[in-house]
Image (cartoon, chains in turn purple, red):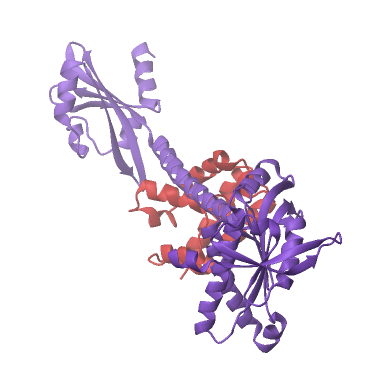
Length: 349
Length: 118
């Protein structure tokens, strides 16, 4: 076998499509087996490029005349498979005759892979968005349970170091005759009413900087001055407490079930921490919480009782009248004051 | 959390080979191939990627309703479903998926039979 014959056999059998075209007419002079396998219907002597849709013959001629090279892609169907072939034209001479050598590489698999990567990345991106949304929901839920700075600490370290906040003002509120109300009405009605009221309280608390820490049954506890210390925590707590009662008064005017609360406010120290491991909750403990709770028992329905530490910080927007005393757990006596909004100040506002 | 089969068999880098192999076999098959005669390559590949990913617990999932709607315009008979089932099993086996995992994947496939066949 001659070298030329071996060359021709090799050329016929390789997995790359090879064709020779007349440079002037662009008619097919030769196509190897692979080329014929893809473009079988093209006869020797026919105009090859008419077979390809949207083929830019002018661009090919111009490029071959200038750089001697032209590269493009074509897509067609072979049985039901979409084939994409990269076409590389090079100017050459065949025994003095100008020809174009066309080398075709099957890049269908690359195109299929590209499509698959597109498809997969879209799936992954969608999942990532969903995970992000879920994470935000969990975060929102946790931020309802604890201050942001505590949440950040919990997220970073997995634990929260108990922290002393001193001084803050604690608002402790419950409802007069709650047990009787529960037995007199359907539980669902009571829950729905409490949901209404606590939602309103939360909104008021947010407005005045007195965040709810706990709501268990009819006991509602909010704290002003935590986690970021403020000078006006007593005013914030008193303002919120007064709005709580105004809201209830208004609500009682248009609802059959009458809700009357009593409120205790105490200024002092608390410790804030996350409690529990599996079922964790953020809570505050300390003398101010206990005192506020005791002061609440001392308050008449729809009034606010405060300790001296609160009253001293209230300023002239509120009035405070002495109203007896309570005995603290250490046996000492603590004076009780009845706190109300200063009428003049309230009118000016 | 238990690892999905998608992760167990090496995630996308391995599943992509299964997908392309299945794609080849589907198109070459004269029973199920004709369903893809007029369909754009990118759409078939997208469909196969999601199909295999969802069966193996990867990042795709279809509700029954979506599956039903997607196939509603096709006349898929039991024969076609059986054929795809055997092509899928052969493809999984050739890519080293253990028989019990093939069973799990094929069971997930079988569970959808009534959603797509006539």
